[in-house]
Length: 253
Image (cartoon, rainbow, N blue to C red; front, side, top):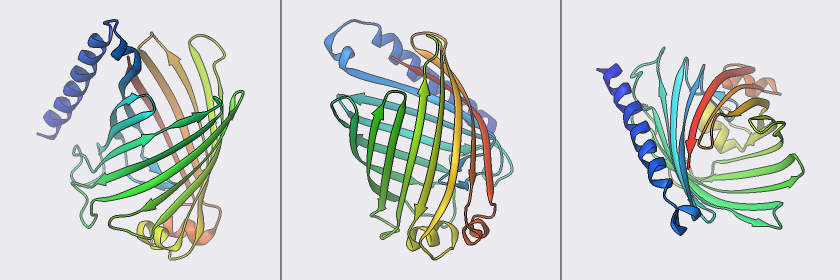
């Protein structure tokens, strides 16, 4: 039954996206302003904010649409092994944001993320209001994000800072790497790890190689590695070193 559900989700996902791309082939003003697409991410384990979220191979599909800076997306996490209710969506998130760009370099993006946990006992639907700022110079981008839970875990705050490098060294291949550090206040860390102190959660690096196979299709293998810099946090996280490898396949109009 779970296998049939998984196949149904995959088929429905690609049917919807394929029909969208066929529609996008028409030339009109609306299509030129509206962007949309979707990704399928298969990872050895899901890592989020320096912490393992799954214990084995995980399937994470997403769809998104953007119109003149206003963007909405849906993302899901489905563990495929080593957990109860595998083959079901353990987390579904909806993100809505608006990005404003100044002089093609400085970006400001407020947004809201709603998290649903349909098959995780003890977790309630919650949401974070957030603000991200980014500044791009050449191939480098500096960014910071600040997230405030405003529903079920009020008072929980998470922040991060990153330096990213993106190099499209051919018309097909783009190499990217990003260094990130993230931290949480006592309320956030206690909610997600049981560590009731303000602390740095991780310092991490991610590297990927994106291959643009056609105008509308890309594949991107990646590797992600985080380390908890302090023993108290690493004990709460259950592991000082966190690593995942994965492959993203994406289509867009």
